[in-house]
Image (tube, rainbow, N blue to C red; front, top):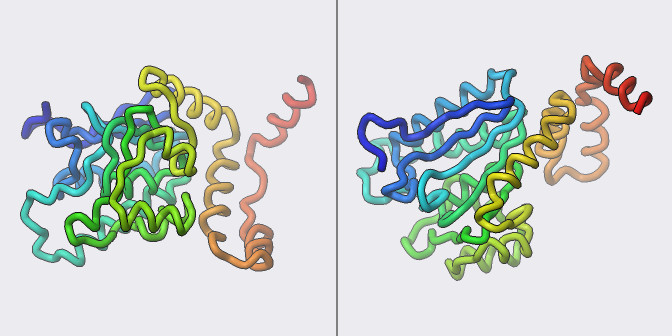
Length: 249
C-alpha cells in the first residue's frame, strides 16, 4: 500500500530499459495531481537520457490505472492544468525511446488515454479497457478522441466512447487496441522479449522511425514522401559495423 513517503511513480532501470510504475495500488493507480507531477518529471528526464533505449509503463497492484482521481479537489487553473497534462502525454509519445504499456487489470478512461500515448500496448488476459467519460458527464482532455480512432478505427472508437462498455484483453487484441494479449503469468516475459527485440536494433533508427511515423500522421502521400526525404536523419554512426556483421553472418 502506498503511503505519504512513498514515490507515486517508481522508476527502475535495468539493461537499457526504464520501467515507470504508477504507485497508488490502494486507489488502483488513479491519477491525482501529485502523481502526475512526478510522472511529468520522469518523462522530462527521459527526454535527455541517452542510456535508456526502451520505456515500459506499468501499474502497481491489481490494476494498470483506474483513470483520473475524481475525488480530489480541482486545480485552481483547471484548463491550464489540463493543458499541462495533455502536453505531458504528448511528450511521452514523442520520446525517441519506444514506449510500451504493460496492461493488467483495469485500464479505464484517463488510464486508457495514458496507455494510448504509448507506442505499444501489451495486455494480459485480465486486462479490462473502457472509456467511461460519458458515465460522469465528461469529455476527453488527454487525447483519447484522437488516439483511439487512429488505433481502432472511427466506428469502434465511437462504440467504446458512447457505450462506455468494458472490453477484455482478448477483445482489445482483436480490435487492434492491444498489439498482443497473453496470459497474466506471461505478461512480464512478453514485455521483456519485445524490449530485447527492439533494443537489438539501432536506437538511432528506432527514434528516427518513430518520428517519421508520428510527424507524417494524416499527411497526404506526396507530402509524407517529401517529409521522409527532406527530414531524413541519415545513417547511424554504427551503420558500417552493423552491415559488416550482417555480411559475415
